[in-house]
Image 1: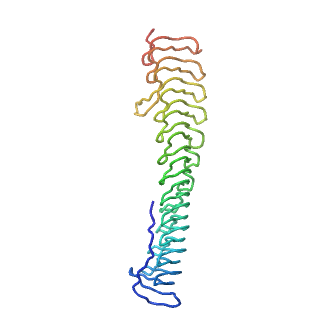
Image 2 (image 1 turned 120 degrees about the vertical axis):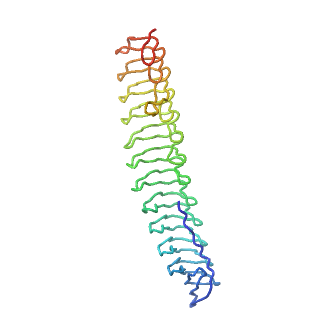
Image 3 (image 1 turned 135 degrees about the horizontal axis):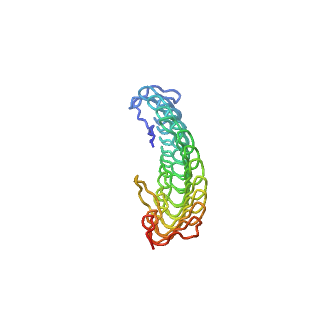
Amino acid sequence: MKRLLVISALILFSSVCFSQNNVQTFKTDSGGKYVGEVSNNLPNGKGIMYYANGNKEYEGMFKDGQFHGTGTSYFENGKLEYAGQWKEGYMDGYGEAYWENGFKCYEGTFKDGFFDGVGTFYREKDGTKKYAGEFKDDYPNGQGTFYYLDGKVEYTGQVKDDQPNGPGTSYYKSGSIEYAGNFSNGYKLEGYGTEYYDGGGKRYEGDFVNGIWEGQGVWYYQNGNIRAKGEFSKDLPCGQVVRYYENGVKKYEGTAALFTDEEGKPVSSAQGYGVWYDENGKLIYKGNFKAGKFDGYGTSYKEDGVTIEHQGQWKDGDFIGK
């Protein structure tokens, strides 16, 4: 985040050009000048300071040669830089700061020249609102809200060092909730939280590590039915799990492990002991699996889910005998 340069208004005067009713004009060592109230040979009260090119540098209140009170500063090109409260040469209190291209940069409270307290920060490129909430030492810190370019909320909740950090909620560009839970160092959930489909409905609810499904959780279809529940690793069921068909009927119960498919993508498949059902809930097979195939000792059943078809040893999905 850009730090606004704070202009110290302590002036070294080279000569007195004009004096009347305590309003004086001084040339400054920088080549500019000061016109305004003076006491103890320093700007005190209301006055205007100019750059060497004749443009205003500051207009407002002075104290002991420094910007102090209500005042407005300008960039050397004449564009508005800051308007608000000052204290001993620094922006301090409520004010509005601007980018040199004319767009507003920040409005809110300042302390010792830094964004500090409650305020709103705007993007330099187009002047759109980027963040509104609490600040500390120029950075978003505390409770706040980040915005997309179109003005829709991107995130609202706890913020630390310009990033989501702590309890909060992030949103898709469509406006629907994306994540809700505890964030750590950016848009990544850490600990217990909930992920949603774009448009609504839970996608996953459970444990996260660095934004990844890791631990105990529940995975949902878009229709709201449970897709899988139990243990997860690397965004997939892994460990002791229960899987379901989209119609809500149990599909598999047992252990699962992670593998890599022919395209190099991670997949979750039955591994170890488990029980497999058809979409009507009838038993298909119970026994040992390897990489999603019947492998080891197991029993398969006919379509009625009761009558045994094969019982014995299996290899790569094929029955090889008792």
